Length: 260
Ligand SMILES: [Zn+2]
Image (cartoon, rainbow, N blue to C red; front, side):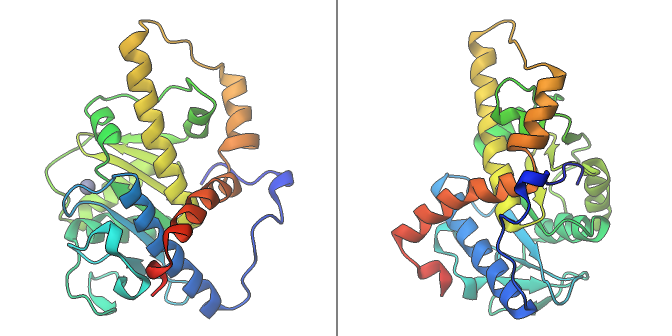
């Protein structure tokens, strides 16, 4: 990923010293993230998936089981999938084939990507109908300035890993991709970061759609200011992780059943 943490962000994230602790944390954040996606209304039937790489078995990842509501997912529902699409851990038997085809190849092509998020959220999929990147119209949108790409080869529901390879290539070293005629995809160094980018990007799509419905000539932020805002203020990995924390607090205040 191209945007690195600036010096002032060093030391803000807790350090976990064992693989067991890291694994438990990743799974808990993943389960919490589905509750957050549910709260934001990002579910669309059975579509949508968030994955996190296992810290011990690096060519496997944790994902939501197919056909379970985001609002119901607990840690004990998560499944671990290998690079052949086989469920190697977890009680559920069904895996979303698109989740495997996209995320397995993303995690394979980009070893630095720890987590990835995708859903058929309304503004992201509406934006994806255009062949157009987001503009830096607001401070929040600067996080995505020159840091997202378009995958413009929709061929139907993603079922083949070859298409996952093409999506991973289109993503490049950016934090996000607009899957044309489909929806948004974001990645990060942590679940927290990937999920925050997804939420923020969805809302940036909403914001630009609203702005362009009212204003004929929008007035984007300049290149220099957009880059500075991205790199030093809102668009680096720790900023994504930190922005996730209030959402986590809200989910935890409703109940801790997701941890079960
Ligand atoms: Zn999809």
